[in-house]
Length: 517
Image 1 (spheres, one colour):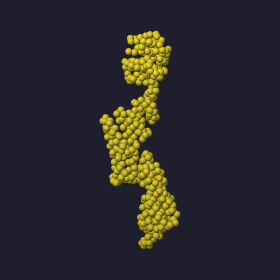
Image 2 (spheres, helix red, strand yellow):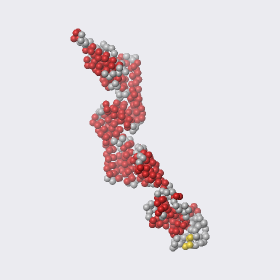
Image 3 (cartoon, rainbow, N blue to C red):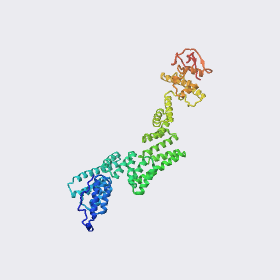
Image 4 (cartoon, rainbow, N blue to C red):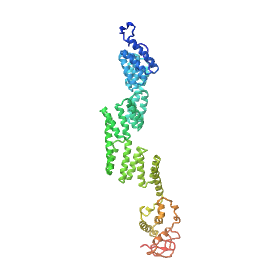
C-alpha cells in the first residue's frame, strides 16, 4: 500500500487563512486538514471511504497538492490507476517538487502499460532526488515491461503467437491495468484458437469500456475464427463506426464479407442441384483465408458432399481428410468420408472411420453402420465369387449360368494343355474357382448365406468340393463323347486328363471325355 502524506505540507497550504474565524470558527484549511487526517486513518485500514474524505478535503481546499496525492494513493489501493494518474498529475502541477507524486505517477504509468511514460517520470524524480532507492526499483520494473512489450511486438509480426502470450503474461504481471497488453494477448490467443480464453479477457475489458474499438475487433476476430461469420461482420462494422481508420478491421471486414458471400452462393447452388457451380464456389471460398480453420473445415466438407454427388469419390475422401486435419472432432466429415470409403469398397478404412464415429456419438444408427462395415470387410477378405464370374450381386439365375459356361470353358485345363506347367496350374486354379463360384451362387440357400457373410467352411455341403462333378453335371449331354482310354494326367486326381482330340482318357471320374468345337 502506497504511503499517504500524513502531516501538513506547508508548501501546499494556503497562507491566506480565513480571517473571519476570529470568533472560534474553524478555517477552511483546518476543515480540509481534518478530512485529510480522517481519510488517512481510513486508508490505513484499507477502507475505500478514504476517497470520500480526500474528495471533501479537495472540495474545501482545491489548491493543496497533498490531498490529490493522497487520493491517488487511495485509488491505487483499489486498482483504479487511471483515476489515480489524473490525481497525481494534478498534484504535480500544483507542486512539481513532490517526490511521492513522481513515484506514484511512475507506478500508475507502469500499471497502465505505459513504461516509456514511467521512465520519463522517474527521470524527472532523479533530478530532484538522485539517490532515491524506490525510484531505482521502479525504473528496473519499467525497463522490464518495455523489454516484454518490444519482444511481444516482434513475435506478433513473426507470427509466433505463443511467444506473444508468454511476454504479455510477464508484462501484465507488472502492468495489471493495461488494456493494450490484454488486447494483444487476447488477439494472440485467438490466433492460437484458444477462443474461450481470449473472449474471457475481452469481455472483461468491454464490461468496463463498451466502446473500446480494439477490444471489439478482437471479439469479432474470435467470432470469425469460430465460423460465426455474420456476427463477426457486425462487430467489424461497429469497430469501423467507432474508428473509421482502423486498418486491420477494414481488412477483416472485407475478408469476412467475401468469405460469407462465396459460402452462401455455394450453398444456394447446391440446393438448386447445380453441383459443379457449388464445387467451384466452395473452391473459391477456400482460397480466401487459409488461417480460418473452422470455416475452411466446413467448406472442405461441403465440397466433399458435392464431390460425392458428382461421383468424384476419391476427391471427396481427400476433402474430408482436409476437413478432419483442420478439425479432428468434425463428426460430419468423418461420416462423409466413411460413406465414401464404403462406396469405394475400402472397407478397412470405412471400419476405422465408423469406429471413430461410434466412439464420438454412441447412437444405434452409428453402431449399425459400424457393424455393416465390419461385415463387408469380413466378406471382402474372402473370394469374391461375383468377380470370379464377372457378374453383379444382383445377377439372375440365367445370368449366373451363362457366366459359368463362359468362364468354365475359358479356363478348362484341357484348353491350355500346350502351355507351361506353371501356366497350366494357374488355369486349373481358376477353373476350380469358377466351379466354386457356381456351386455357391447357383444354390439359393448357399448364395444367401454367402451374401450375409457366413464363413464358407460353415456351409453345409461345401467341404469335399469336386469341380469335375459340377462340370460334368453342367455339360453332360449332346456334344460330349465318353471313353475309357487312360491317357496321361494334367493335375487332376487319379490322373484325370482334359483333351481336345480323340485320344486320352476323360478328365472326370469314369473317364469322361470333352471335345471343344
